[in-house]
Length: 214
Image 1 (spheres, helix red, strand yellow):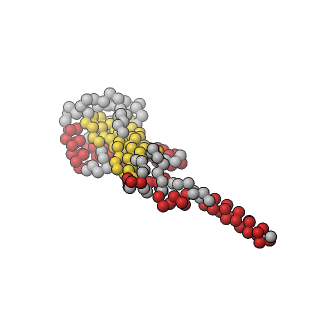
Image 2 (spheres, one colour):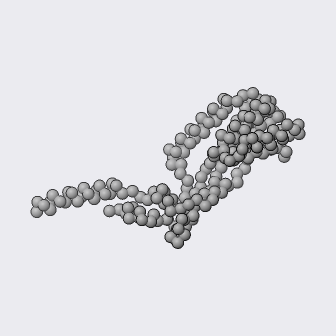
Image 3 (tube, one colour):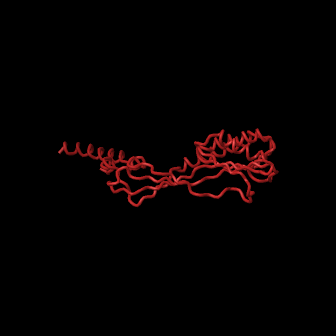
């Protein structure tokens, strides 16, 4: 009788310990069964209204060469007929976009500037590594930070948010990067992971047993 009494607390403690160790399946466990097939950038309107029809639009990508971008932009902006150029970039291309803008402003020192920071939505399509496993494709939506910078030979509205007068370089970027980093901190505190959609909840293969409650 004493043996039964002494064993019972050990069994209870063991069950409680096992229950405290159990965790639900994580996104990492799910995604290891998938590989990224493609990334689709959703179309988004430019954050500027009433742009001139002859504006030069420079779409900066992560793999773009600054020498090629600036060679084309300088050639166009040296023409008296061309009055404005618009640089845009998203994600990893933001820093390269800012570099292009500063190079242009140092070459043409009388340019007025308006900067807009916003988000673009992308969708990542993930396919199962083993199609025979019966898993559905996943769509992961992400909000990617983006920037658009309008440079103009003609005066722009100084009351427009993001306006920067000719001859000033550093102050605005410091304020922009500070507000961007604060926004990233808030998103991390709120979760910040992309939303996942799937027709079936994918199973985690051999790890399935480890997710069962004792």
